[in-house]
Length: 316
Image (cartoon, rainbow, N blue to C red):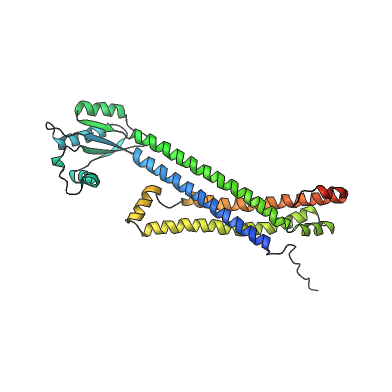
């Protein structure tokens, strides 16, 4: 004897289910997009801070009584005697002219202007040198020298980075809150269209746990499809942006975008966050479906025990 396969209690596809899937996909896309953007901004701000804090600059003003080349070499050697310094580089005349080119034009002869010369010292970020002692030594040995440890810029950049990341996390919290509320109400709306199924199953003697499990499985499939579609769309958008940036290097548009936003890469942590967001949305929808079904069964039992309660039930 061949056993006839049983059909699904809930229709695999209906208007409410399809609408819920679209809502979940849209909210998952927005949440994952915001999460990836916050991750990218945080990485970019950290990169800016690291690039500035790993270098210090020694500036030597021109003087008729000073041999500039000897003063630059001496300043570099003095700086490298301190613990915490790594390498030193004298910015030559051609590089100095290129630095001034945006303001003074090309073909500049720096000997015609009293242009200061620079020495760039790379330092150990984790074990920086004694900047006060270095500044005093340079001033005593080379009066025309001044040390810029970029502390002011680093402090401002740290403040800006923290503010930017906090704003990003604030937006992320708002998007996740909107996503949670939207998914909850959309799930309840989809379940309200299937309330008659809950009533029939309960009246024929189906256990509450069985009914809740069947609805859980149904809405878990819907939420997984929607969250996967939204998460993959967000991940694909970041991947396409990264490929576009890599293929259009050294162009004005890409250079400006890279300077402002950094690399359009969210890394392993960002993609892991997108995957976690997809799972959270699916679990949220499933839990909402279970609670809503159990509440509906409780209301049915209340009506059966006291029919007068039917008029006071909140609409589903």
